[in-house]
Length: 405
Image (cartoon, rainbow, N blue to C red):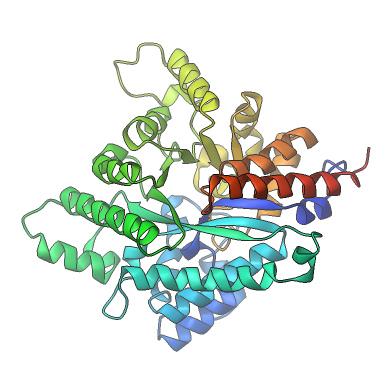
């Protein structure tokens, strides 16, 4: 352990989580309570049992990691449940010094006969907003001893859908009986894009970004170009899950076809051996130019260490994680949790891993923390964002004075 950066310092500094899935970050006691209330069958109704059977420290593969989402989504089908889960997520982040989060989820997984799109998003905003108000009215914030808390919502389209995923998707397949699964999926993405623009610009909700999640291999991002073009035309910021289970070409596609401002994961950015396009005759040169472009354009990489170690066999040993290369190439990098429940993690823990496993230095830590705030899709004006970042930097530097020399 790098004793020059103690864990209590990591807990105290203001932090961000820019890659944070709502349905992957429930408290287990809340999951159990809601499952009993809504008659959702779980493999166990104790925290120890669920940790042993579903939410593990290690997983055999990505499909096993994803199994838990079936249980979490099942208890997130009412406005009350969504608001409570969002509130508790904000509280958990506040408790460890996180002062800005962007909560992402697929609203179409939660639309049913009782909830429409606006109600799903409003419920989550209500929960997050309640925690925000409590913190921002605190004496510490009012006296300048702490920084305020802010949040944004990122709505996720899915690369692949089935009717069983939710009542919304089932209805969509029903009304498009002559369309292919791919065409139905594209229609769902386009409808979500329209909703994102309306909720952000007409309803005043803090929908700050549009994302594409799900299996990369076989489901390319450019299937969703129309949806991304629509949100791009209406000034919504974009992120894409890319380079997590596929190579550098996936990241290139996210940037060029989806106008990505940030990349979710980006794990295989430097993996020239994963390039498949025969037209790319010099894979090493291709990766070099791609990395330089990402660096120069300050396209922030949303890095999730524990999640990668759990779902990617080549990442079991985090000492091999490309975060080290990203830092060496001076990319804009933000350290994120991905799923606090599935990965049993926190932002503090992820920073601890980066320091201990990848030798992140105090200078690099400062850069990464501030990059999270600078790379955020902050819901206010640019001037308000700059003021917030300035508060964060001042607070960080005040706390850093106590670090061992």
